[in-house]
Amino acid sequence: MTETFGARVVFGIVAGIARPALNLMMGRTWERFDALPEGGFIACPNHVTEIDPLVVGHAFYNHGRLPRYLAKESLFKVPVVGAVLRATRQIPVARSTAGANKSLTLARQLIDEGSVAIVYPEGTLTRDPDEWPMRGRTGAARLALQTGAPVVPIAHWGAQQVLPRYGKSLKIWPRKTVRVRVGDPVDLSDLLGRPVTRTVLEEATSRIIAAVTAEVAVLRGAEPPAKPWDPAVHGQKATGRDFGAAPTDGEQA
Image 1 (cartoon, rainbow, N blue to C red):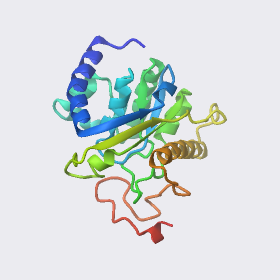
Image 2: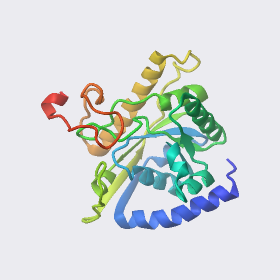
Image 3: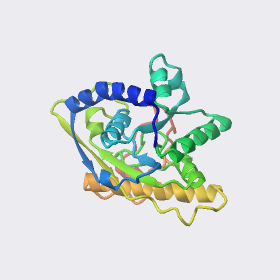
Image 4: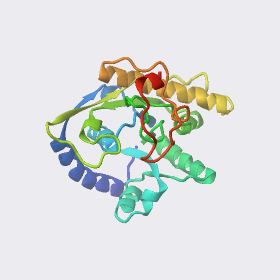
């Protein structure tokens, strides 16, 4: 893929600031990055803390891949931040249907160019009380089915110890270690070429979440829940910091 000179320069400046800070705050272990596809693909990480995009982006950048995120459109209007997002060709996501379709078109263009489109399949920080991946949204699945691009599950664990979910302060001492692991591409071959119905989207989404959860389980060395946490079932808000008190283990079961 041929990257623009401007994008590489801005990425280099951002990395020159972010990488030393991240290395100071935490140790890191990167696993199976040699298994990444050569061309463009969709990366689907779990989402446990507001700093995990930095952690995942750090891992990709250090392996020679420039990460492109689907980010809230409002961030592109923030001074300086918006300029950086535009210069590095990040992908704005609007709430409207037309805006969402435009986002998918831009993401497809970047994937066709050989880039990495990072899509959080959960759509927001997990609401699961034990921080396992929760029920997914269909954006990553829709993009995968429209493009035919490989979907690679990305698991990370440890960043939430540095900045807890919706936390307000960093906890850098004692120093923590963050692990980022690459899984095998999700098999969606039997769904490609079929009409993109709600049923097909939900099946693809379930497979993506299951693959991400399996990789998180490897990092945690623990057995994941039998099925992903569903905020709607537990009366939680789908977005925002105030998503309700976490139910007890008995209620979760």
